[in-house]
Length: 290
Ligand SMILES: Nc1ncnc2c1ncn2[C@@H]1O[C@H](COP(=O)(O)OP(=O)(O)O)[C@@H](O)[C@H]1O
Ligand SMILES: [Mg+2]
Image (cartoon, rainbow, N blue to C red):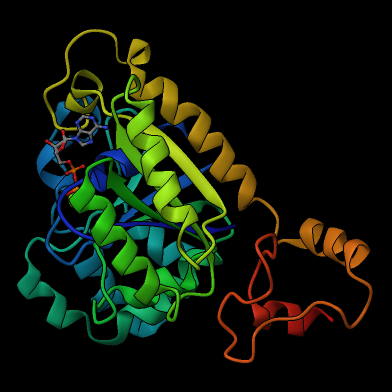
């Protein structure tokens, strides 16, 4: 199945909340993996079935110790646990100091997440930069979604981060703006900033800024979660993302073959997203399949 990585450029636009709500609504079996090196929020905000506390000793750190014997679905699931409501989660580190003890786990972890047999994986990667330890998880993902708000500074940092990230990431890229459902103008402004960039962002989503809905993922919810704008918008987004990563791009490859006769699919010599605005996948994938 597939790994989808969510991250932010700066600030706290709502990556963890978005990961939780998308995970809750994902149309297939899914594991939420907290890969934010700044420390787990899920362990603090959420509970196990019956309102019991989550086991904070079971997660990335315990997995790091066990992974010396190899990684695979069974090991990953043995270090995961269930949230109240049923979502499977792998808790992240408790504190940034624990990241040092994870050694070279990030790269094999990303590859394993992207190849799990039993579930898709949504990785909450927190803030990401070119020297972030969790970058290999982003690099292994089939879809990378950067989350921002519709404020000038959030978008400015997103732009800057995208222009760097594009040199490190081969995956499909998407942007999710967290904004008041009534503020469509603000969201449009974000899209026009992205349109003006040389980096092509093929996938764009607007998740509702909705404090009532978000409170449910902060351990403070009251009332009917299913009626919130957050859930309504997230349901569609989860469906679209899951469909995007469902098959290993075979379908798109066939379409591209039909559209471009053999030998005409090109990309820039530097190998960076240079095959045109509709070109899915990565240069190496095209190479491998031709
Ligand atoms: N879609 C949203 N609507 C309203 N509030 C939100 C939303 N997403 C996050 N928040 C709130 O913003 C704060 C930070 O959210 P969080 O998901 O932890 O951000 P991040 O993971 O980017 O640091 C939390 O108090 C959360 O409830
Ligand atoms: Mg977070």
